[in-house]
Image (cartoon, rainbow, N blue to C red; front, side, top):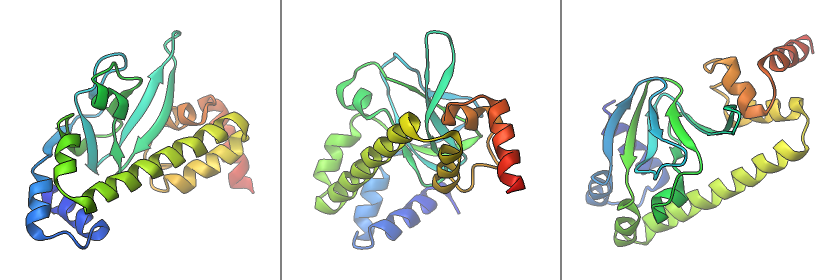
Length: 195
């Protein structure tokens, strides 16, 4: 399926009431792009110029601390959205970096996307409002898990949230998401496999 056709199919699943011409106008707000593995889309501390909808592959959002250690906030596999919303909306330095964990095909949107979205009507506005609500709820769930859940509980939650990624991602990325070392993750996986 061609990239824009895959996106149009996504829109029709989530917004079945959109007219064909509305889908075409909305799709025109995006720029298709292929990202190489490890290609950075947004650099932490620089103003973000794009967010993305992932057609294929996987992106990640991560913070690099003062010691150079990466802390992964989110993965964005196929059909997920990813952006530093604050940076895009306010043209402020990005709070985190976004890069491609795998070679990825994405649809990019820029800061002008948000004012244009308001002009496209209530159905698309409601859809993005719901996406934003879901994003906030997911980040709250993640924050509570990081602060209070065991490593095992965080790993089981990771498997539930990202069922296709456990076999696709490098161990170090999963460990950075969970807040543990790759060695601890290896031990945890062995313990869970033993049952």
